Structure formats: structure tokens, C-alpha cells
Length: 555
Image (tube, rainbow, N blue to C red; front, top):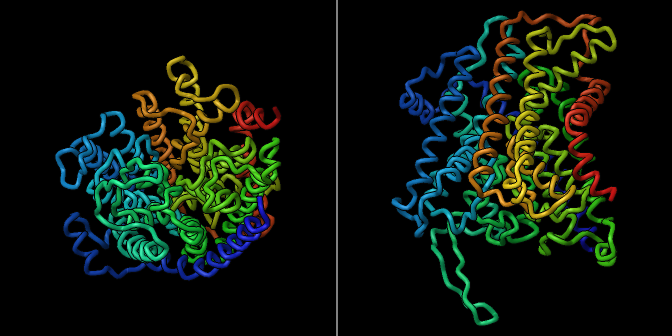
């Protein structure tokens, strides 16, 4: 590693922090105003007429949850049909329809905001499916996560009426007023950095050796912008953000990292604004940013101080890193993509050191709440805040209340089930995959590294991340089906439990704080909150981590 790489990396990190600090307040306040406004835009009223919903009606949590599940189910069916019938559609570029299990996996993946890809986009999909199928779901799946987060916040601040909003209104607003304008601006910036945007098919080029290579163009910038802004991650090309058409320069790389983190790191401000106490949002932001900083430092240290003769000779673990970006920018991108639910990659995670790859794995196992995905990160960290209040109250004899809402048996049960849903899908999936020689044969490595490959795949699916450790052949009927099921469980079970928790809080009469109330906006509580995030994950996943990345590192 050269001094220039270190200097460039430090400058990028510093600039990233400045940019995130600059947009946090205006963006967070914009989301709060949008999701609480009583005014409907003309285009929104037109959408309500098409959907046949009353834009001013409020619903209780079962109706809200049913709307989310119904909308997502229809989205899966539509995208599945789109993928299966691709060969009969315009702009297919000669691509045939997807095999059934792969179409199921892909449809579920994009609707759940996972964007796991067991296919090569440039060779398996045409432009129409990429634009009208995948890119549309990039907007809608991100909007669903934002809707659920805002519904939970509403449940916390409402007193006794039992309503948490209207899903269809929230969905339209999140898409029209937040994601579409920001994605449009993001696409323009990416275009200026050199990201491709056209409707070109395959073009044959002569290589330096005299051979030929077929290169596909397409509507890449428009998909790339919402891919990272909505913490989706599915790339137009198989190489994802390591491909020069998706991510051509160090500037575009920094822009993509910024877009991944912009909304998730701004949502604590939204939360503080909506609950009427911005110090509450600042405490949540401190937890998110603190753990993100530690993870970034661990990953950077592991990749720049790698053990082994070759890494030490060249100064860093450069295998699998894109030379256009260097080790620092690659490690920063990897931390951002696994700390959010994005899953985009600009380097080969399977080539990371044992500790570096383990840190990326832990980022997802934390529930991707540091800062997490669009909406999902906020509601995940708030559920952990509920756990923290309950545990802290028991430890110091304080009343278990969160923003004036009592935390009783129902609330703590819902929060606990939320924490258990994803580990269940993850660990059961890994156990089933390890039980058969046929499924184990998909691993390209044996021993601890092979276990890490499998653990990473199910962690990515169950936490709706979508990044791949690679080193594992997942385009088989078993893995397409099993990983799809993990995505469904990891997305919708926690989501429904969050809405039930919001409904439970909304039926309570908000109580004024007393001397016995545990304050939840202090540095002390933020430290407890961070400890609960880390300890809960450690207790749940430490045995698996010990057999995988930790065993490999110690070896």
C-alpha cells in the first residue's frame, strides 16, 4: 500500500463525513415534513383514486400490515411473471425467460429490498425487465421500509387512538416526494462522473490481443442511483459496482458510498423531529455512527495490516480489490454496503482477510442497524432501544417506559420475537445446507472459510442485504429456494412484528416522565443501547463466528 492510497482514503473519509453532516438536517426534516403533512399533491390524489383509497383515512396496525403484505405479494407475482415471460417482451436483447426457482429467488429478492443476484445481469436480463421490473422495485421496496419506520414512530407518539397511518398514502409520498427526486439528482451526478445511460444492446469490440468482446450498454445510471440511494444493491452487471460502467472513477465511488448512507443517517433526525425531541434522534444517531466507525476501523486495519508474505510485501491485502479505488476506498465501500442493507460491492468480499470478512459479516448480523437500510435501520434500532429500556429499567429499578409508553409483557414479547426471526432463518438455513453432501459441494472452499462462505450467504439473505461473499455456487434449485425463503422470513416477520408493536404503543395513553423514568436521550443510555446491539448479536452468533472467521483468523 502506498502513501497516496492512505492519503486518498483519509481524504475520502473526511469528505464523506462532511457531506453526511451537511445533508442530515435538511434531508431528515424533509422526510419528517413529507410523512406528516396534511396536504396531498395533485399526482398523489390521482394515485389514491387509482388505488381507491381515502387519502385522509387512518388505519390500525392489522390493516396497515395486511396492506404491506398484500402489496408485496402482488409485487412478487408481477415480477416473477415479468422474469418468466422476458423472452416475449420488447428490449429483451435475446434473453430468454428465467428458470422458475431463479425467477422466484430474484422476484423475492428485489421486493424484499435484498437484491441478491444468482444471475449475471448483462447476460440474463433485457433492458425492459431491468427498467420496469427491477428498478421499479428498487423504489417501492425502499419506500415500504420507510413507511414501516414512520408507522412505528407514529405509534410511539400517538396517545390512545390506536391508528398508525395509512400505508398507501405513506407509500405514494415516500416514492413521489423523497425517493424519485433524490434518485433523479443522484443519476445526474453519476452521469457526470461517467456512469453509462443508454439503450444500447451488445456491441462487439476488438481486444488488444486481436480477439473480440461483447459489451452491453443500457439504462445504468438511472438504476445505479436508486440501487444505492434505496439501499437495494442489485447491479446492472454481474461485477456490480466494480464494473467501470456502473462505477468508473474514485469520485463516482465516493458518490455511491454517500448515497448509501445519506437517508439512513438522516432518519434519526426525522425520528427526533416527529417525536418532538431531537435529542432522542441524536442519541440514536450516536449509536449508529459509533458502531459504524468502529467497524470501518476494524475492516481498514485488517485489510491494510494483513498477515502473510505477499500482503506484507505489497503493504496491504490487495487481492480482490479494484485497482481504480485502492484498499481504503474498497474497505469503506464494503463497510457501508454491509452496515446498510445495500449489498452492492466494489471488491471481492471472499478475498478479504479473515478478520476483515468477519467484520463485514458482523455488520449484517447486527441487523444492519448501523445505520441500516432505508427505514429498516431506524425501526430495527428502535426495537433494540425498547429492549435496552426494559433491560436498563430492570438493572437500576427504573420504570420501563419509552417516550411515555409502558413496556409490558406484550411489547417485550414482540420486540424479542423481532430479534429472533432473522437468526432463526439464518441459522436454520445454514444447518440445512450443511446437512447434505449435495449442498455442501456448492462451497468452493473447505474448513472455516467454507463455513464463512455459507454463513455469509444466509446472513445476507436473512438480513435483506444481498451482498455475496462469492466462493459459493448458489444458482441451484436448493439455494434459490432456500435463500428466497430466508429473505421472506427476514423481511416480513420482523416487519409485521414492528407494526404490531407500533399498534400496541398507539393504544396506550402517553404518560408524562417522572423521577422514576429512565431517560433515553442521554450519553449513558446511548452507551447502553450500543452495548445491547453488540451483546445481543454476540450471544446469538458468536458460536457460528467462532467456527468460521475467528477460527480462520486464529489459524
